[in-house]
Image (cartoon, rainbow, N blue to C red; front, side, top):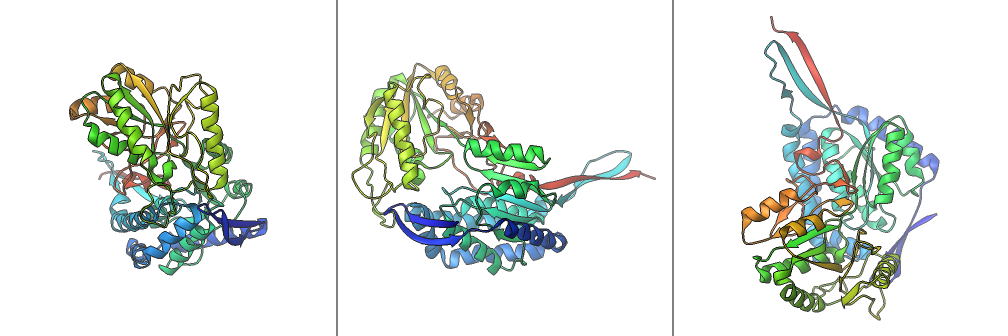
Length: 457
């Protein structure tokens, strides 16, 4: 079996990698477990030195790493460059903060000295997707390496150049052999790894079906797990919103990464008083996007990650249309080579429409018109997903009240859902569980051990 990198802008094969065999996977677990015995005893200062060098290596050759991202999965080159810089920021954040985040925590008992001690668990498995092929690896691996764990990484099969490069960077930054290993393996080998008694946990970012499968494996084997799954983020526009700003944010929120983001704005819920004007401006702005070579700085809408992704999105859109949705813009693919999809706006997507509660992973927006803010909140909450969302109003306190009523893991006011190293990232309902980033992210896979020293003399 080979794992292949295909340029989605041209559908041309770039490079192939040989997949590992089952015996190779067992050897990798052995190596990770052995490496953990020593790595858990290293000081924060030793770990910090490696992570700061990792950040420097990223920045020193950022253009080359960005180029690899764009070739592997088609992201616009400016977005790839931003992703590399963001990864460097995450590495620095945990390098400088891990010791504080994992410091002993006093339990303040009057009659005894007690505290919580944070200890690493051991070998962890990461199963990561293609849409942010550096960032999603780094946000899982870096805090856990700083905590003293060791990492096995099964990356998405369509970004093998990114997977191989990240492993090289972790080695170059000074991590001992076995602390971080990339595994070119088929999905069925995930069960082999999770079932191994030496593996202590698994984190997956990906689709809902993949999350269910990994959660079942983790539960069966009594392993810790963190899941970051799909999203159907609401974008709520109130009648007092600044439409000039809102429309700009709407296009940005829907088309970031060509719409292939779990926290991309997907459901645009607009109060009726301004719905016509919003739609007029939104359609004009979406139709002005320029499809093109993602390496070209002039391109404003890149291809999807693969031909299969474009085919799936077309099937979803067509099923929505067949069920009664109205096409305001787009709805199909352009007549050009590559995995491109035209910017699309759909309306009249009723609750019985098959795409009403589906995640559309591409530049497809669904717009809903509601009578008032209560109806907006009710519609926003009619979703099996609960990742992120946003509210737009010139009345910040009103927007905050609405944000508190929406059932998601994250809500943003007057800006689309985003992530940064200092903020916890994660969802509820079918969007998964657990948190990444911030101080919470480094606490998911550590043993919070109580130390009780007995009554005070």
